[in-house]
Length: 195
Image (cartoon, rainbow, N blue to C red; front, side, top):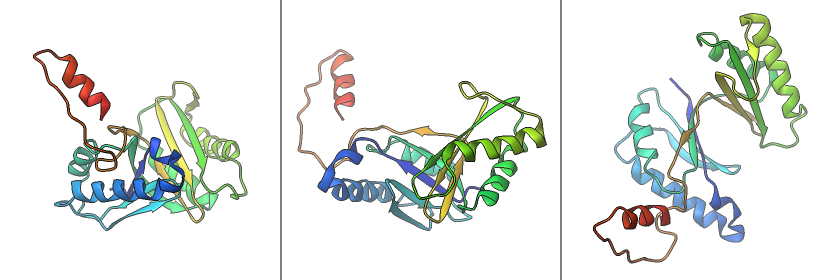
């Protein structure tokens, strides 16, 4: 069972002074999509949206709903630890232990830029421990297992999969558009891409 879902968005991040409006609209749309499902809370956090899960959250149904929300670039079911390097290392080791792979890679991003250890060094320390324990090989280009780490001011989020969203802008932030549908496939595809 994962602790939370980390939701990333794309174009919203460049909206300047209007950015909170776009982010809040995306949060509202996510809440609307998850109306009948159980979770603890949804909040904005450092350029991402966090959905805290309950023990009885249905991850499959949540995944299905989030894949249909415009404005989400990708989302990931994640584990949460403190940003202490030893806690991060222990959690990654625990996540990797049951994987049937020969190669892996660690990809760290520091949202909290004052974190005392640089991303490359975090990758190196954790990779060394995994190599020592499980005798796996690092493959930075095509590792069979990718583990992402996002380091925040107090916490770290760790996940193994990025699930594509629909991208674009959240529904409700733009004006209305009329679409003419013909008998071919071109117009519905163009309409979908425009959204």
